[in-house]
Length: 553
Ligand code: FBP
Image 1 (cartoon, helix red, strand yellow):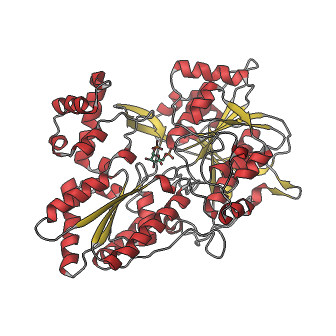
Image 2: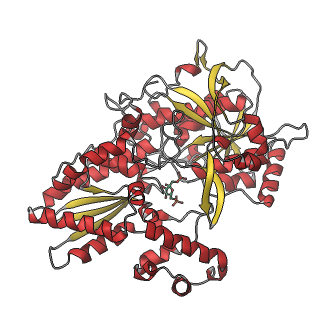
Image 3: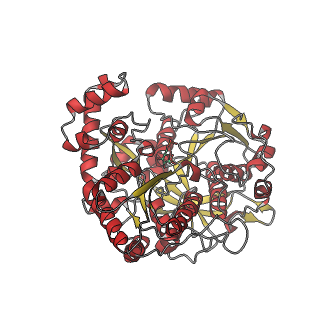
């Protein structure tokens, strides 16, 4: 398939794919005028207090001075009709709804030129652009994936990269860049906004606007952005799969399933799926860290449930763990920190084959746990980090580790038949739920409006999901904090983790014992695109924000 030329792609003749693009995309009232959809202008609302003693402002002086960390709210239609050249790119992992952001941008920027960047930040540096046509946009509306443009995870940071980018921007006469990405990509958007602030010969700059996407659901800002797009679809797909497995277990009556759910750091995905399906046991990483639990205590909890249920004739169950669980177990995170110190101190392991690389770290890492872990976990803990310095948790078979350890722990007492699963990639490119389709479309309208309003260093936001929706703009420098990456502290967009006093977590904590004791599961089935439940919101959002349950624009 050719990225950047979707019109050449033969979509299947499945009824669903034929009908999805016909489903409506509704703008919220702020964008609707008597003559059709219109971009809006913004006014300053409140200032965000980062409490960082000015360190972020010192690193990003220009965009801090431009925004004063002010949140913006819509303030009427944009009457100006300047034609601009705007480039848009996907950055990071795919999330359902990405194509609808581009539909929204195209609608907001009517009269301007919208250039698609092929293959993410890498394509931006290479100046690999094409003009997005109305026909292309109509072809991908309400369709999952990022295939209109493609994506990657290149981090633009070095002086050389920045110099290349400045050149590309001037050569292609860009006025603005829209980065559709998660926390790391929006951090990158802040870096770009600062670097491109006043690079044109006339003293003006190339504006940079971020759009929050990630199936992980962790780009949230209290009161301004309950969720990024992509989370709703991923969790509905996982809930269908987990619900199906839960339905199978008492039928076959012999398997324990160990399921890892994607979601790099925060446990929003696992919590949402637990609320939708009620698995026998679900671990929430943030609670594991708060309670300073050991790996062995997690194994013991599962083993006790296996033995208890077996004593009552139930030889089945389902355990759900978040993708990032290991990083939240204090002894494992200490081990990871030590491995990363070794990586920073001596890079000579880089060219070694798997066996010698393992030997290299075994001879240097003191933490006792390292030697106790199986090779399939050791190898992933010492693997190269991604370009943003993240451990590649999607590649760590945590579900297998836990299944193996539980099997060893109950050996001789009961016969455990474990099955392991990782639900990840299958969740993040499906056709967007109606919630994600509408949210992402409106985020595209917000981003296009911010460009036309001359803003830079902002992330598009959208809130008040059950009252018609409200566009907001969030200053990137207002939501940054220090995080340890590649053994060093860096300013990044802070992820919102599950808070143990979140109403959604409290609801889960109140009910999990009954889900563990008995088969109290739910099997919600496939996501709905038509009918009364099509506009349902994720349960965590409904419970945490007191919403009425349905997305309304
Ligand atoms: P983003 O934060 O870029 O949206 O990525 C989310 C994610 O799907 C994580 O949940 C997962 O750990 C990671 O991407 C997998 O990355 P890759 O696509 O590079 O395998």
